Length: 236
Ligand SMILES: N[C@@H](CCC(=O)N[C@@H](CS)C(=O)NCC(=O)O)C(=O)O
Image (tube, rainbow, N blue to C red; front, side):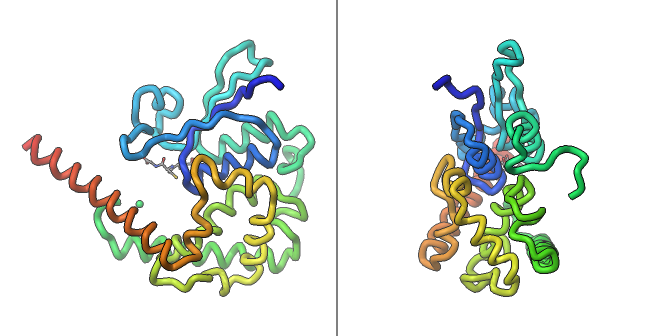
């Protein structure tokens, strides 16, 4: 088998696994580079050459049809679009073109605003799935629309407020909950969701693991804030 032409630069986040799930659903071989956020590797010059926006995910692809030229793509939506346009020739997770079909300061206002918005969007998805009566967001096959959405829905407990929320936050959205589980059972989702580290779905469903997970997050953001303060003081 020839070596993969695609390298995925990522870490374990919802935007990151959109891409690893897409790659898995398309049965594509690829290399993985695990970006280290603790050293701000996503802002390092070599990575900014790939994504000037300094965020993951990003991919590079050196496809034989491009005469050995490396293609660089960033923004999860654009990457998914690139992958299906180039590699989903049988429209397994897409449709033909033209067819129908965080902050270191605690801000209660911002948190409330985004949690309310998330709840509203879950409601929109739930109603759509209920009214359409389809297995997936667009028809009865899993497409990139489902893959882009699932990573954010499966982490609902986190998006809606962690420890302040019941263990099954999707209970109020029955059609969405059913769809989340249907997606979860897909082989490609299972294969892609653990890249480059184990996925957090199980952690968020276990109150003890959840507390440890949140504590790690609090420590990380405190350390970042302390470092920022120390740098500001040193520059005074
Ligand atoms: N709109 C972008 C969002 C990318 C994004 O926010 N990535 C986060 C991880 S999910 C990141 O790299 N954060 C680190 C930083 O902002 O420095 C996409 O969909 O790709």
